[in-house]
Each structure stands twice: as structure tokens, then as C-alpha cells.
Image 1: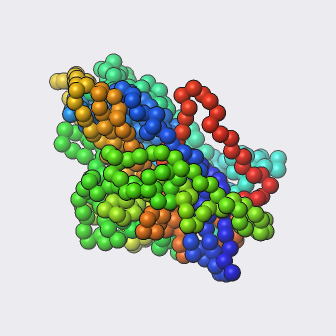
Image 2: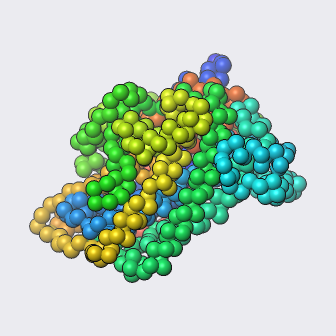
Image 3: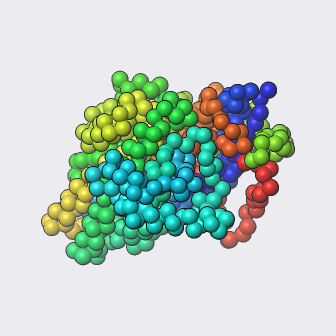
Length: 574
């Protein structure tokens, strides 16, 4: 007899997400539903606004991806108006983008995702000296892994446990049968978890050097950047360089070795291998390093066939709302997109609670609408976006900078190249992407310094003709995958605006053809060891680094309360 498991809310993500699955008598998932539970109205807020303000509004879509949406809003308007910013502005944006990625990826792994692989309670039984020796198996000069340091880490966390709580590590599924790291390996990862809390402060400062603050930087403007005084100050440039090198050191001596360690330990864990999700991969060119040089290229892989990379045709992108809480169900190109809400709610049914008991809880309408996220499609097909798509496409296209890191990782772990098509692969590719950026983004820094010696322009002048209609877009790769903003301008103001974010692609509900999005697809066939502790579900979903605040967002300009939400604490839902 089938049973239902509801994970609501999925924690350690940005935004509000619930996952509902149906399992058979063997605890194998036969159906899955991904539901975003809050609405994004940012597109409606932008209508009638001055297009030059678009970036300042769109960066408020999320408190994590602020620079991504800020840049997207600015570049979409530049594209519409036919503006080409000076090279200095372009390279400055690249350096700010590098700061974003080098902040986002390590924080995702350690603070949001690592506890899906790392058993904190197990680390409390580790031998610090043996753990220090273990660290040298994965790095020539391990980061923060001296025996004395690891002993201090162990004592620090043990102090939490003696008080009857684990602080930030409370309420985990510790001792779950799908954990595979040894106590010593868990202690190594725990040390790096704590170090990353310090590192993220440094990388946030790195963004603020040219952005004036983080989050919500302020130095981008339609036509260029406004941080000219910082660009002309050798001390500010030097500060960026020093902080970049500190972050790169952490990635090379902590993040990379930890993924090698995890890759070896989890190579045969069924819940993280052989589950690519949607096998259609979509990525877009990003990281301009010089006048004619980019770090990552665009491309599409269909049905997991790595023998051919297809070129991207933006005209094939649509969004539909057959199973989403919006009025117009039609598959519309984003220039014509609509965002008018049509909430139909949940129905009551039976599910399994955190104690393994049957309880009544709100369930989705299987035959109706069940998410605030729309269903983006490329030529009618669901796509997977993110570091996995970006790394695989660029590796297959022969990108030497990507290939060097990929092949080194495969050699260090002993994994076959096909292993990237999995939850483990998504997690590893996020690290690989961070390392590729850490190894190469300073080319943009060096080119910027060289160009400033002969050209100090940071802004391109322009005019907006109120008698003309314009349309333009930004489409690029951001930490969670392919992001696009689409704007139409009429009478000097925004006529229509649509943002299709990475988590919209990946967390898509079913479409009119009943095709699942990648979150849902990757859960099909998953065997859950303990229905009251669905770690396997959480591990898979976390591997996408969900940002549901980007995919669905709402605000009221007058500060009025839009609604209240109560999360049950009595075990009614997992």
C-alpha cells in the first residue's frame, strides 16, 4: 500500500519549499511533487517603473543572490537600449561576480549541504591525531587540520552536546544508515564547516570593495559602474587581491579535498549516484575575463547525450502554468509572460510524521495546481541548470580550464566521468566550478589593471526615447544556474518584466504534458531507509542549492502584512 511523506519546510535553503512523495511497500518513491509556498510578485511591482531602477528592485528578489539579480536587471535594460559598457565596467562586474560565486558555493556546501554527508555526532568520537593524518590523504597541506586544532574543534562541539543540545547542529538525522564518513573524516569536515563561517565574512568584504556593501551592492548602473574612485586606488585593488587569494586558498586546501574525501566515501551510496534528474542540461556564457575571452561557454545537452552540444536558441524558451497557481496556463515566451495569481490551495490527507505515525496534513491536488513556481521549458522540454550543467557542457566542448579541474578530480577520487550525472555529481560540480573560478578569475583583475593604465572610462552615455519601444534581456550563468531577465520598455517606463531563475527551471512542477522538473525527477526510484527520517530526500534536494526566494517573491511597498504562516512543531509534518 502506498504512503505519503511530506517534508515541509525543507530547511537549510533560501525560501519556502515543501516536497511531497508517494512511496510503495518497499519505501521506494514512485511519485514526487515539489511545491513553492510563497508567491513572487516582483514582475508586477516593476511595471510602470523607470527602467534604470530595474536592477535596484530586482536585487531585492533575494538576500543571497543579490548581485546576480542586480546585474541581470542592469544588463537587461542595457541590452534593450543598445548600450555597450566600457571594458573597465565589464571587468569590474566580473570581479564582483567572482566574489559572489566564491561566497555562495563554499557556504552552500558547508553551511547548507555538508550535514547531509557529515555526521556531527560521529565526529565527537574521533581521534584528532588520526584525523590529522587522514587529512593528508586528500591535500598536501590540509587546511585547519592540525591535531591540536582538531582537538579544539571536537571540544567546542562537545561542549554543546554536554548542555543537551548541538547548537547549529541540532535536529539532524545523526547515525542515519546512509552516512559513510568515518569519525575522523567527519571531524575534518566539521573543522572546515567552522572555518567557512569566518571565510564567508572575508569574501563578503571582497564584494563590498567595488560594490560599497554586501548584500545589495550599489555600484552598478545602466551604462557601467560608479566605483571609479575604488578602481583608481591601488590600495583598494590590493585589498581585493589579498582577499581573493585567501578565499582561493580555502577552496584549494579545504573545499576541494573535502569533496575528494566525500566522493570516495559515497561512490557506492545508492541515494546519491545514478540519479541525474532531468537529463537535459542548459548553461549560458559567463565570466568575461578580457575583451574577447570568457571563462564559461553556452550550450545544451539533450537526454544525457554528451556526444553533441547544441547551441542555445532563446526563442525556444517558454513558461507555462498548467500546474502553477497563476491564471494563464499557456506556454508563453518571457517577453509575453504573465504573473497573475490563481491560488487553489491544498486538500487534507494522510501522511507519515516524524515519529513514523499516520497523521492528517495538507496535501497537494495531484490533478490540479500545486506550486507558485511556473514550468519553464526549452523547446517544450524540462531542463536542468546549475554547476552540473555548466561543468558538463564546458567539459564536453573542450574548455581546457574546466577540463583540467574535472580530470584532476576524477583521478583523485577514482570516479568515472559518468559519476557526475548524479546528486554526488551536482555537489562535486559546484566545487569544481568554484575552483575553476578561483584558478582563473584573476585574469580579469590583471586585464582590468592593465586597461586602467590607458583608459579610465567606466560609463557609456545613453538616452531613452519615450516615443520608441524597446525590449532586451540578460541571460547568463549564476551560482545556481541559468538566469534570465526579460524587459519591455514603452513610453519610457517598464511595460512588462519577467525573470526566469535557476530554481524555476529545477523546481518546476509538472507541465501540460505531465513532464516533471528536475527536483521531482531525481526523486523517482529513491529508496528511503526510514520514512520518519527522510535524509535521502533532503540530500538530493539540497544538491541543487534551492533558492525559492528567487523563484517566488512578494513584497508590499507600503509595508502592509501580506499573510502569516505557522509551521507545526508537534510532529504533524516532517
